[in-house]
Image (cartoon, rainbow, N blue to C red; front, side, top):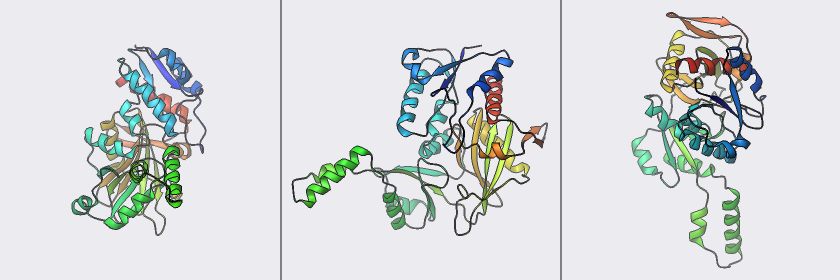
Length: 335
């Protein structure tokens, strides 16, 4: 077997949002050790000296902080050039905090469900959108979790207004913007061209809207274990994510089969799926293959698992670390 490394960031693996504890990497290492497989810990801070690692298996990670994520993505890109197998894959890392890339990648792997379209201020043609897509549409920032940056749009005029509200300047752009406006106020020379060039722009997706939904599902998959949470939509809203109105209920086999089909196309060790149902058809809203919220796994009494041709609910509680280790180990056996 190839040598196996696990990337860690300040001795942490698969760190989550600040609301959740970070992962104890030692649980994962011990899980593999018990099965006579050795994991070598590879701290990010040492990669400047070990970037020549090749022909190995590397358990990758990501970050919620944009500048840090870019650093990790650059490292992973270089590692991918040295004939290393990355788990989760480079594409799934690219999907993290990037709903735009998610839309491209799901089409590449053959997922045709609740299509979204990726734009930014420099590429968007509002008249084209108005002619091509039917309102209402769902507008989303490409990053963020919960319902942050998700809005229901009913017209071209409203779309323009809401896209502009997404603009949050970086430090440099903000300083230039302030300087030029101060110059203009004082009637001093300023560059309108420079101001327009550096004025912050946003990237976003517009996604087909499924009307009359009262809930959706969060499905966390750890290899062959399926944890499911029903997320109800609050009154006068259209978003289930971030509603806080959650419950664990009995699940139809059809949802599990749909989720299994999506999971097999993505071909990763674990996955988080947001799935909705209009009474006739299931739709994939979003997905993440790393750094997803663990609430569904942590608070569920158990998981669904397919045995032969039927789905069974297994009432069992294990730690998140154990499920991550279970997924990574079993994925290696079939990869």
